Length: 301
Ligand SMILES: [Ca+2]
Ligand SMILES: [Ca+2]
Image (cartoon, rainbow, N blue to C red):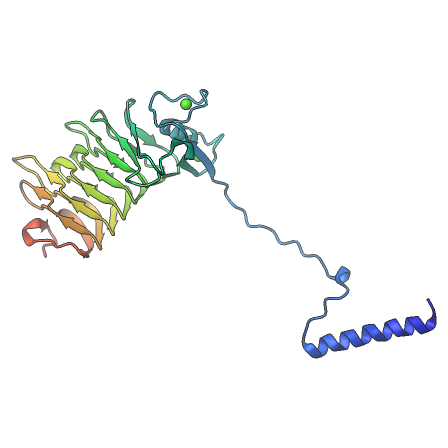
């Protein structure tokens, strides 16, 4: 390269740098000289996706190429092959987006004993039916579960059983679900046994508790019910029945922005009966609670 050309190029680069400086643009030339920085990616738990592709029920069989909901829950609980929390969804091939489907249980309750998010297509599109033979779901004490987008019906916990639709011993969120026409002694819809239960945007209707808690019974746990509707739930025992909608026995109950209507109990507390423990908040939203529809003890309002 001639001296003249070298001088020309040096002068050109000098002017370019000066121009960048004037314009406030940070000089990024030469790019090769920039130090490469390696930023560590945060550690992320990989959620396994388990897809239910059959609405049948039967004994668990993980070798037949067909995944029932019962199979999917067994797979999620197998932390060797499905470590940590899992997501269970329903395959598009089931056509649930256009044609509602129903899983009728024939093998007893579905037990959730791991951390699972179970997402149905919508309460109007998928029903899980206990067929009056058993409870529908039981959530173990070490499980953290979410159930959303389906209807729970036809659960029957038996004459002295608790939680016709669901018995929760762990941490459970129920969102965008319908819980209807389940029966039990305590907690026709849901029995919360010292667990943490969050009910969000749900509908409880036509559930029957023989003695206590047609819709929901809280036994010493934490229950919050938000943006939900409880209608036509009953506690039916003619000699002693309390809390048609909700019965709280110890623990804490929060009811916020809910509608409670036409829930009945033979003895007292048609809507809500708090026998002990506390009702942390009561904002009834669009609903209207008649005085004779609820009974709060010892925190009588
Ligand atoms: Ca199978
Ligand atoms: Ca798992």
